[in-house]
Image 1: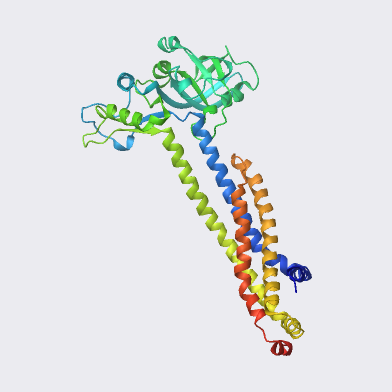
Image 2: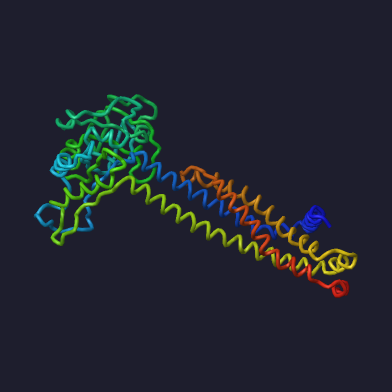
Length: 402
């Protein structure tokens, strides 16, 4: 009996028991579909997180107060950041290209009958370059003069603009920011961020204006820095920490600030996403193993039901390996079919769920191939024992079986 004959016989056996074969394949379908869906959604989430960080630029460094390390600093200074820190860093760290202090708060914006809740950022004009926000849909950024004179000017993120103006021209319009009138000087083009610190859901006002007229404080919530060279980020970060540690240490010697390197954050997200993807794939693979156990059980039942058929075939000259190949092929074919249906199910799940999570739908070809090959391996491993059992049946005993 040739391999083609064995394959044809295996397909006939599967078709003759459609419902049982379908239920047997269900575990493999769910297992493969779960692997594809979980890896795809995890990959989409990773890509979206990386895009959100890369929107701000890969050479950006952020300094923030570390409120977890409260208390008086060794030099009697406050644990917050201020303009003196910005000045010292600008003067003493040559690897810094641009630097801007910033304050942040949340508040209501109003324009005519429209209103929205958003993040209000008080920044210096160079923040546009530091945060890759120089491309304007309308107008331009406020100037250093506006900042020095405490002018009430505002630059809108794309999402805020759409909430207040829809498609109107916003430049020159007067909006209410925390109950005070601000002139819109520009609108930043759509950047595609989401979640916390979404650049599209922010407005920018001059730093000094925000400090004196909106929030009433002279301290800073953060310092944003553009490093000169991405390859020298660790050195730049180290130099920043050395300068700030001179005045920003607690009585116990702990730094009262935290420095975030954008490149390190991107690498950390990639590492965490890979680990999460492996974990999700491992969990989903359990379904494949359960499906394999189901296939082995059904194949054992099939061997028992077809004992007389096996005895008859052996009595007329069928070789042991022919019986083994036929039953093994039945198991493998069911797993292959289950794998194909699982891939389709997983792809549909990815394209259905991803838009609702606001992440790009990604069907990873490597995950598809791995899941498909794993399903075939499950068919071989869990079909081998029933096939061996069938091939070892003695013809006389098999023919006597009722």
